[in-house]
Image (cartoon, rainbow, N blue to C red; front, side, top):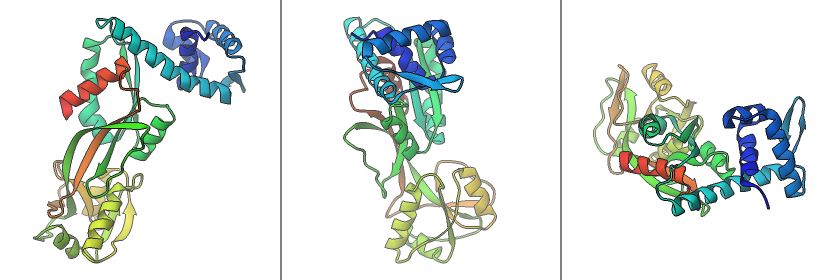
Length: 295
């Protein structure tokens, strides 16, 4: 029978990477962590850690058991709360998301959670959707904040659950002084011979640009790629091209937003978890706060 306390040590070692950090996180000693992991290895009947210079690393079996440990501990926590609804959710929720969603959706929640749930902690990792979903699939985070566009839907595998949070219109960012009327196809036609700027870490906006340009009858000339919307605007001001930008965000002097209609372009934001994980109380609290506060 595997001991839950020892499984927690293994899961924390997988997350933090060192026995000293695990000991500091859980308020114990490095020696105790090492001894308890040795007992867990005997219980599991296989080596779970191996030397890695002055540190240790998980063996392949250790990594597999650590992934199972997260599921087991989540189930135990869910069962505990189900048996005692008044119990306080306790644990660390690891969130990977893109910068806008972190600022708009997550930070307001993180700021208020400690007052209501002292034993709940949120760790934030900034990643584009593909990166966040990869971390989620590998059980290295508990929640991914991702996005797609209505004209370039991403879809999710059956192993994941996605909840829509919010959506926002996007426009075409062009140099100030540019004038163009009409629907999205007319707008794109007006910039047929212009260079286009797209995201360097995610292909969703490029897919939208190529889709609408194709509907307008041409292939866009993708010239520059940047992850930062601020840098994208700098490139527009410098006369290096045009790009999709959120319609509800302020722009730099020198940038004009041209509305896109018929078809509209909307970015859609999702909270994504692994299948069956939403009942874990700490994650449930975060998801509920996201849904109630920002949907």
